[in-house]
Image 1 (cartoon, helix red, strand yellow):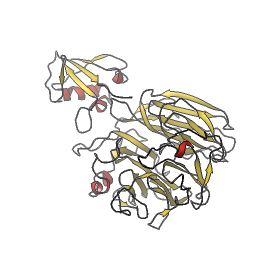
Image 2 (cartoon, rainbow over the protein chains, first blue to last red):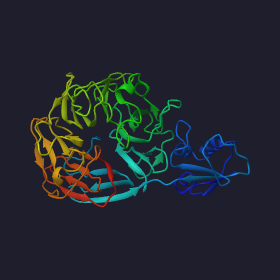
Image 3 (tube, each protein chain N blue to C red):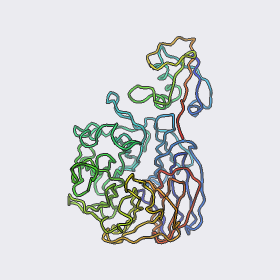
Image 4 (cartoon, one colour):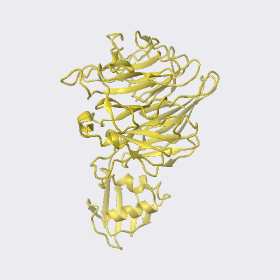
Length: 86
Length: 376
């Protein structure tokens, strides 16, 4: 499936704004992304398996908060870096 | 503090870790002319950047961004290029704890090349054996049965999170080490981190019901002298102290600071060769704790007799309406002769002295909020 990558994570994807990855859930997808782009998962999901506070996932335009969210092969996933900083 | 090689006639380099990236300040041989190089990691929050004195080419930088989780970057060519750690510091899955950021980096013992230690926020201790590529928790501390009693929960501590800092390795014994915790105090291990005990007697904790408790203190910066490893100093939230092992009780050496200035501050720097000489940068810790130069008159205070007396040094520093804050990792010394002393402020200035703190010059300005300055 297609995964849209936010600017802060493109250092992992050689500046690619969208990539392909696989997974039956968001959790598996994040793991697959990490296999393809080492280090990426830990920047968006913490060591207890929780989505980090300023990260959001959207599946086909709908926000999903649970990494157990099931995915289909034709889904489009958007990773968003929510407002933070200063 | 990274020991440096900057004897008379050799250039000095400072690593400047800021809220928006990493810079280097590089001097000529006289340490009169400085060149600012950078930024690297523009936009990243860099808490600490340290060079490895053992191989003179490895550097580590603890970083995160506003959105992304924490990591450590490594360089093996003195900072020209960097690569991310494969396995940054992270608490054990199932522990319920999450590293917000790596706060402190310390190279390990000289006999253990490749070993590094990291202190995190929330308070955790981590060790690498491959020059920062992978990190594991020091279970003897992170899972210690008494850790919660010593430090409180992860929700306790200052608004930006309690920090484990001042990881000190005894140069005589790689298994003998100390740590400082902003929520907890100073702790000692004699077995490489497998077990720990508090070492805080004699240090005030005015904010606690018991003014002389066994733990719960707020050391800001703890230092061990490399030439006299039984000599420790600390700049604490409640004063300045010295400990001569095997004694177990810290001595109050801040009492001789001028009362109008007080003895509260963040950083402390030791002379690289003389265990009796040290520098502090006092801050206003009154009422709501402004944490700026008392009265708007910044000054460095130096002792040359182990804290018995202190001398004020402010020549070259602004004399009025200068409300400077220098964080605990943002003051350092090189190994030059005379010793160069340097500090960075939260307002983005780097100040340096070529004469052991007597006179000062602004070396760089308009940088972001500075978290750490380390001489290479």
